[in-house]
Length: 85
Image 1 (cartoon, rainbow, N blue to C red):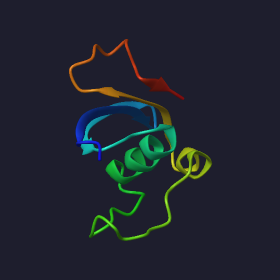
Image 2: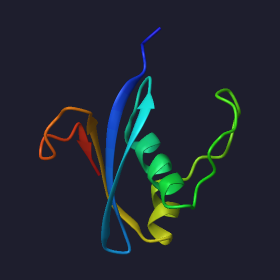
Image 3: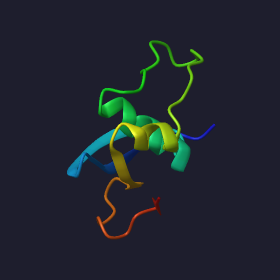
Image 4: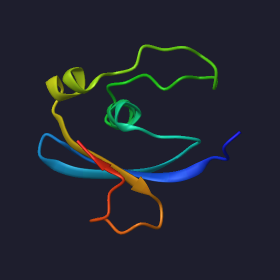
């Protein structure tokens, strides 16, 4: 079982840069878009770790003004993103 790691997610909301840190076991682009939408107040944060919720997709997030979502491990330099979409 992988141990949780700290990730930094950067995104833009209506052209304004935003950033936050989240602790997760794994992170991919789809998860990054969902958590960026949660930080922006669009997505739903599950109350329990195993609760199944409908995740916000990239097209849905873009409709609400979220763009340029990228993520990296905490401690990495901003220009060394693990993924940029």
